[in-house]
Length: 371
Ligand SMILES: O=C(O)CCC(=O)C(=O)O
Ligand SMILES: [Mn+2]
Image (cartoon, rainbow, N blue to C red; front, side):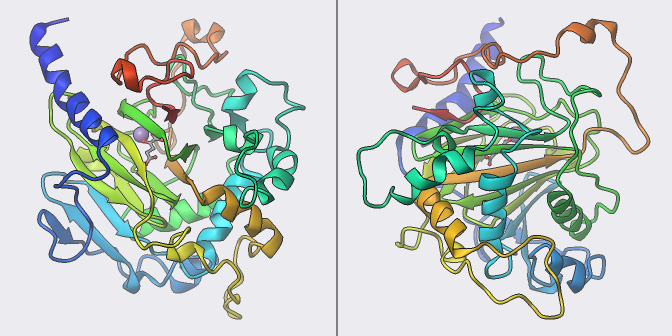
């Protein structure tokens, strides 16, 4: 590898290491009015009805606060646009429903489908005791690192396959459609998602999302639970990334010139605000708007007990993608026919962390990692 490239790669890696170590170095962008490099963004008012927004738990579009980031055309940051009581519903879906079969998760690599069939029911009793029992074995739900939906991303080959598809959850597809519509993407189709599950010592390595065949459609990223630092870089690792704070409920849209940029999550941080859970997660039981029937059921107090225990020291991210261009299909490639199995071990072939920070898990740079 050329020396210049190695030197260049150091830039993103160096900054990754800096943020991995220190709680919040100066220079982290907080999306709020008046912040340097941040500009208020105009959304596609009129494109999304209050009714459609409400059905998936989003506030009326006029109330959303969205921002551009200087130097990153196509990047949009939306400050938590969820209605009270709705973040808990999406968290419950991520913990109770989406990890179920036929969706695929990291635990499938080591366990039978019977063992991973219902992580929630195996884990809920133990998780409820989390508040009182300090020393206990991690539940399977706490060992969950990723779930794939729709076209299931293959971590080894870094590709999607036509045959490796299971129905994409209708509620998440609709949430994604609404957010894309608000951002001016009227034909977005949610066809794949990676759900990432982080704990306080987890990180996500430097990568770009290029496996999708359609790069004109945006990447939509939803975050819940504890906060994180997100690093957004350039088209090569030689470009120094910008660090930004992502809090519970925040949505990020990567499109246009920002769609294929390198990015990473070097660090999970406790949410600002002091309590155990972020404010948007403190009120799970909210009366439904009598005029708008939600697409998902409210989160019951029993279910919330489990989610709240989990989120005390965890963050969940859902990154939704359109894989195919409108009317497009997968290319015919004979060499693809035998490489459908994923081991999860060979996907990442580069070390992004210093020896003392390296993971104990299989070599994974994109998958969420624990220290
Ligand atoms: O957790 C995040 O904020 C980023 C997730 C991500 O980059 C991915 O799933 O490709
Ligand atoms: Mn990504």
